[in-house]
Image 1 (tube, rainbow, N blue to C red):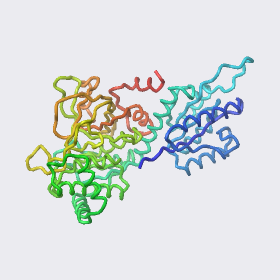
Image 2 (image 1 turned 180 degrees about the horizontal axis):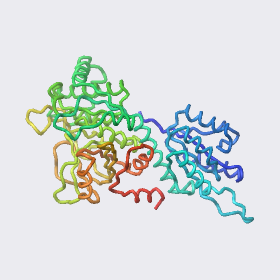
Image 3 (image 1 turned 90 degrees about the vertical axis):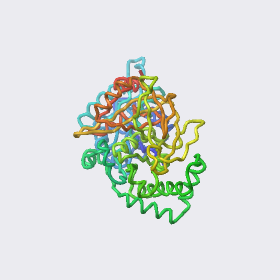
Image 4 (image 1 turned 120 degrees about the vertical axis):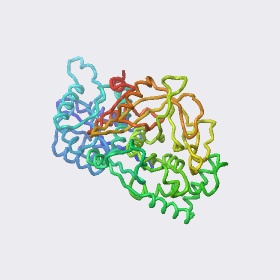
Length: 475
């Protein structure tokens, strides 16, 4: 179930400017952000105005309220000049992503008096937040109904959701990496020490036993998954036994993930699993991903991290898909095939295409359990969290789906701005042949999220860092 971002709303003023105008812009801003699908924790009842100003006792109450409410981020709209020291104290104590903005000032009154001096106060608060070592997001001084504010605020909400998901990442690791896949080597201790990312390992015996238990119980959850497979796919090449085993594996994986508080799964799909359970897990992975718990192949822990980040940046509005960067388009120098054996979510199937339940196609002795279909194109963000030698980066690029030759497995052809540039960057690393695609523009949100994840550097290929920053400024 999707969780709403819980936003601490702490509008601020300073005593020397218009109290009435500060109160007016507090209400206008509260009304505007109330249009977003978020939960707002405000300051009403803290004092008579519901505003943060120069009062140490109120600051302690605000900190306590935001902590008790477990807010995910804090917004400090400067409704006039604002109170930079108190804002910074609250921001430091709460320790969550911070948004700084103020409504654009009007002209001075006929007598030369200025009501708010909001922009001036933003300069002051930015400096003091730096003194407190508080990272923050800034929306350029603008009208509350402007595109600049809407763009910046929406992007901040998505970035905060990403940070929230990242900070509580726990990945169910099903078995070790396949022996030949050295690209999937990762540093479990380093991920825990540097980012707080946990792995919960189980063995193939664990998943085999749980799968067999689900089959034996033959409960309603199992049969619901069987019905879903049979009603949404061409199952003419699959027998009932194989379909039920895939469904049971899905139920088993989901049970382990829920029991151990895991937000993603990385499974050793190649190829001991088919020997122990008699199926490939590709379709089960697809079904899980479609329900909000991404499952990645070949025990790619970094791929699981990427999937959770992309999904959170899209505010859980669409599932990610975990893909191989495979071959170049023969007729398009900027075209590339994104493919995997059968793990792309069914909900992404291209219009007019019916997914097919099949055996794995590379070897005759491979087991059933994949599904095959082309997925829809459109605008797609391409993302990859990866690292080595203690340095971690987040690859960010935009693509667009194009037509291309038929391929087995699940696939989509994409076009990017400059594939040779992408290819060189990906080969030189720290990346591998895996990436995550998602049908949403999550690049600005993921770029902003890196501000709140120490040790993670955004690596932007398209748009560039300067283009992202200009977009956020409304340029």
